[in-house]
Length: 373
Ligand SMILES: [Zn+2]
Image (cartoon, rainbow, N blue to C red):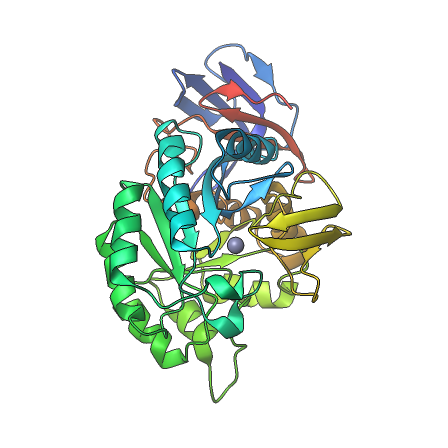
């Protein structure tokens, strides 16, 4: 299949008037100007970019990954796929040990099937004062035995673990997560600047939704934000839904952490559906005007999809198109260690999105096959 008629968003540059050839699920060739043979599909303008990669998502399409029901997880994946997300990591929330063990083992099978790219444990080792929409009763100190058991049940499919490193055994947990082959992410934390530096030294390489569920930056107590933004080893998640982070704060993060910002949805089940009454884990969530909140007003995940996050980055934050696309493609691919996707290069998986000139999604392909919506 030969696609023409759109600018290609490649790692080094925008290629106007590009063409791209797909075969056997891979990108076979790409270039600019006259294609080697007549096109199979003229995209008629806009941009052709890699499929979007979401490393933090709890749900969508009125379904949740929590509980690891295969049909529900398929609904979540399909909902985000219809918004250009071709690779998704399933994020669990803080829960009792037996629930986590069940979900990790069940999600491992869905990862084997290729439905998800793995599992993200957001908690339960989080700071009580920064629990956000996590059930406070489920929070606890890291227990080495429980952590090792979960990593074993995951069989390598646990991609990321979010924890508060200041909790007792927090740094030990960071090391265990990294030794277990997962990304140690700092989040839902009350850690000081120095404590976060120590966690990074122990192997943490990601910030879970930078700015949210952590102390604000103070010039005499810079806290987690300064430590996470300044360190070249750390990739910083941002939820760019217009609610979680002010565009000016997001712009600062993009400039201070160039090439180290990853756009995430942190979506809950209302993503792709609309306003109404939902649940996040055990907690009731009301979605009004697209904003998900607990009864006490706490923001409870988002209803965001990554196509909208990319558009917000460009239009509201002023991020150059290529950098905004990279934050939802190449950067999360590198974070996950997925070398076969996230960039328009020969040999990569033919996971693609077509955006019009105003960055609205026009089409999605997974392994070269069009996604029907
Ligand atoms: Zn989350």
